[in-house]
Amino acid sequence: MKDSFKKVFGSKNRILVVMAHPDDTELYAGGTVARLTKEGKEVRVIKMTYGEKGCKQDDIPEAKLKKIRKKEDRTSMNILGISDENNVYLDLGDGSVKNNMETIEKVVRQIRIFKPDLIITHNPEDRIIRFDKDENWLNHRDHLHTGIIAIDAAYPYSRDISFFPEQLKDSSLSSHSCIEFLFVDYYYHPDNVLIDITGTVDTRVRAHSAHSSQYSLEHAQDFADFFTKLPEYPKGKLFEKFRYVMAD
Image (cartoon, rainbow, N blue to C red; front, side):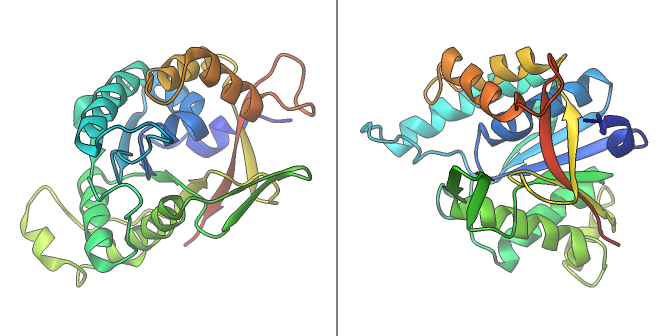
């Protein structure tokens, strides 16, 4: 098992994370993001929604839960080393992320502002996620749409100046091409790479547990163990797994 951090991120300075909900970054890539900021990389995290309907069976008004989740998320991002400037909420409505031009334009704006070298986002293909022969789960509709939107926004919409030309009247925005991606929620794919998070797993767990309306510290640790501590990994080593794509 080989750590691909240097291969993937060695020449990168700016990494954009595009996720559907608060806590998605921590759940799927928290250790990697913590390692990136620790290494001095600039990371911007976009949340498509506030996750304001994710109350499970608790009867919490959406407006109240939105405030709670925003506060928790800011704490979590601070733990991961994400500045307030690089913590972006699009507020598209939990469960209502639409794959349309209006949403693509919002993500294009962020790409043209931030100009990432690589984008981390959701699995854009699979409705059913297969973890192993005994474990499967449904890909949340918001996750699926977010992954597709991130790809579309990167190509061709943020690159080609005929798309959303009114954005380019702002001198801080310019055409930008990003062709490298890490996709979460791929567990059996020939493009998969492993990122060693042995040194940042504790940061991942603390950040994840900051979403205390959703997770306890014990739950956050259980998720870290489930995703990063697999039998085939070398003893004492923890990894987050991604599909790495370079698509020119």
